[in-house]
Each structure stands twice: as C-alpha cells, then as structure tokens.
Image (cartoon, rainbow, N blue to C red; front, side):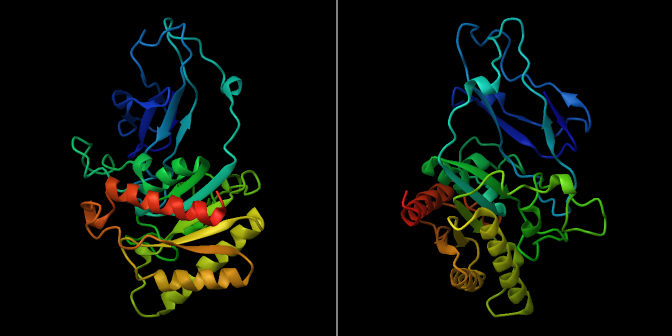
Amino acid sequence: MSQVQKAQGNVFQVFLDGVIQPASRFNTSMWQPGQATKVALFAAGSLSPDTLHTVTIVKDTEPMLAGTKVEPNYVTFHGFVGDDSSARLVAPAALEKASPPRKVEFLGDSITAGFDNQCDIPGSPKGFPWSESFGKSWATLICDELDAECHYNAWSGFGMVSNCCGGATFASDVWSRTLATVGSANPSDPHGTTPDNMWDFKAWTADAVVINLGTNDYLGPTPTPKSAAFRERYLALVLATAQAYGDGVHFFLACGPMSTDYCTEVDWVIGRANAWGVKAHFLDQRGFDGGKYGRTCAFGHPSSRIDAAMATSGSAFIKAAMGW
C-alpha cells in the first residue's frame, strides 16, 4: 500500500523470489495525490501459506520524466497487506542479510536512467516513460556485476550547470537530496532543498562514485564560459564528496556515448582531482552507439543491448581499478 505525492510516470517492477513478475508491474499514473492506494501484487490464494517467499518491489523509472522543473513526485510505501489465504507476513528485520561489502553510487542523466532503452526488446512497453527500464540500464547492470549495494541519482534532461530542456535545478543540486523531487521551501531558490531532505553522507559511505554528466550541458567543441563553469562545479562536487566519504573512495568520471563534447572537461577534472589526492579515473563510454551493439533508441539513447555492453566494459574497468 502506497501513497503518491503527485501521480506522474512512476513505474514499479515486482519480483517474487528473485524472479520478475511482468503481470504484477504497476504504475501510479491514475493514482490520486495524497491518497493511499492498495495494489494487488498477486492473485488471492496464489502464494502458499506453507512457503516462505521474498517479495521485492523496485521503482523502474526516474523521479519525473522530462521534469526539469522540480516538483514533488514521490511515493510513500506504507507496507504489505496479506489476505486470509496468504502466507504469514514476516518483518524485514527477521530476514535481514549482511549488506554487500561493496558500495557504489551513481549520478547521471537519461543515459544512466535508461531512457527508452527497451526500444530494441520485442513486445516491450512503448511510449514515455513506459519504454524506460532502469533495471536494464548500464548502472544497474554494473551494480549487479560488482555484487554491490548501490545508490542512484539518474534524471533525464539534467546537467552539471545547465539542462537540456529548461529548469534552474541541476543534477549537481539534487545529488545532495534524499528525495530528488523535493526542492527548497523558498520558491526563489532552485538549487536548495528542505533541511530534513538533505542527505546524510555519513549514513552510507560509498567505495566508488560513478558520474556521467555533460550531455545535457551542451558545452560544444571549443572552450566557453559555460565549460569553465562546468569544470569548476564538477571539481567542487568531487572534492566535497571525497571529503564526505573519506580517502578510500574512488571516482569514475565518464564521457559518452551520446556526446563527447565534455570529455576534455572531464579529463581536466580528473587531473585536478588527482592533484588534490583524490582517486579519480576516466570511465570511457564513447563509441558504444556506433552500431556494433545494435540500434540506438529515441534521440540516440542507448538500447538495452548497448546498456549491457557498457556494463560489461564498465564493470571490468571498475573491478580492475578497485582491486575487486
């Protein structure tokens, strides 16, 4: 049972004992803001009361598709409810397992979110945001390959200092938030958030941070004041995050595949970060959209096959750099 703040393009996938259940997939588009909604995940009596099952619900879409003007769009989960024929509900604490020893954080835009990445899958949902699957994105696949616990902040249209499609809030702003779509109580402040929504970086310490931002900044092939601002903001973000996470954290700063105009700026940030004693690496995501891995999707975005290839390459690079 969940409550949505604003019903817009939230799609959820359901897993039963680790297996995805396509028939249980649901979205919030018809939900009423502020009202609790019950979702029937399984038919009554379909789960044996004598069998212990693990039910996992995963949000498969970004905070708000094409919503670079930030507005509340979050869902509050209230809990599971069983019927008379269902198996007993077991509190999560009773099933807790040890957390994976590796922790990885991702910050990106539509490339990371998986925008339209199901376009190459026959029979997949069509139209936005239904054609998007974060579960098939390169970031999620890298996390699985690394056997890591991961945090993600991926939102289409957002950049480091400029967005593709308007809005004064940037990806570099929302990274410090617990809920990305909760902005400042001050309408004239597009960069801040409420004090209780600020993320506590001490609560969860990443071993590796992966960033791919720059496609939506449209920096161009020659240096400009915008590219200088991009470099400075990027470096400040990396240095602040390194200070929060400690000396052991590694940064993997990516460029590509949809644009390479910001690669020079990323190289500059890596050089300066390393000079400050931060462990920063270039994650090369260029060239994956050249046809070797099949078609691209809407507006040149990576397809599921391209995402898979990026994940194979990226996870191998991260493993080598981290000694995993």
